[in-house]
Image (cartoon, rainbow, N blue to C red; front, top):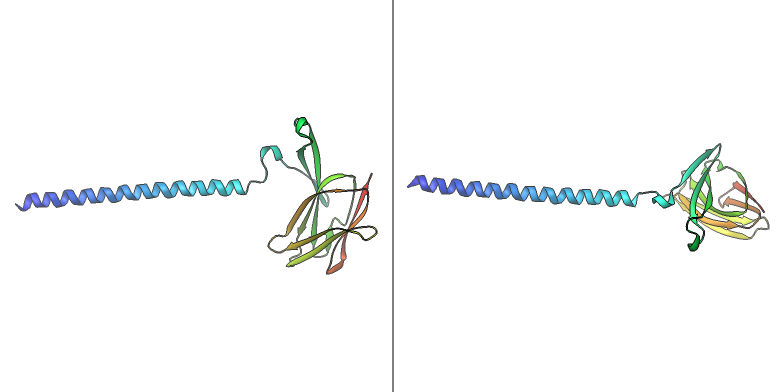
Length: 173
């Protein structure tokens, strides 16, 4: 009699073991799927630009120029306007480059805080002192960019706490 009881216990034990393995397999599959989904969402979030917004960077001695294709008008989707970017870096000794000369037109103005300081307060003014823009750079977000269309003239970008940190803009017609 103990023989059939032993077989029943063994059979129940095997079934329980199979259920545990099946549960472990299902849990592992779900976790793997969740991890893959999370990685793909994270990668998508960190993607720099979509194929229609490809950025080409051209290095110059103290300046990088980025060229962005942007649609001009809805009816002319095949034609694209080239938008250049002026990339400024603020180093511990000031702006790099310290002077920019360019023709009039829309540009992406980008400023990167490389000073190691927590906060920077920047101000873009015209030659007669009129404030065009105020920019606040924080340690947690040390980069600022904006599409600007400055009229022809002279402009100054400076940091409030460091009057010697100046970048001169000359926009021609």
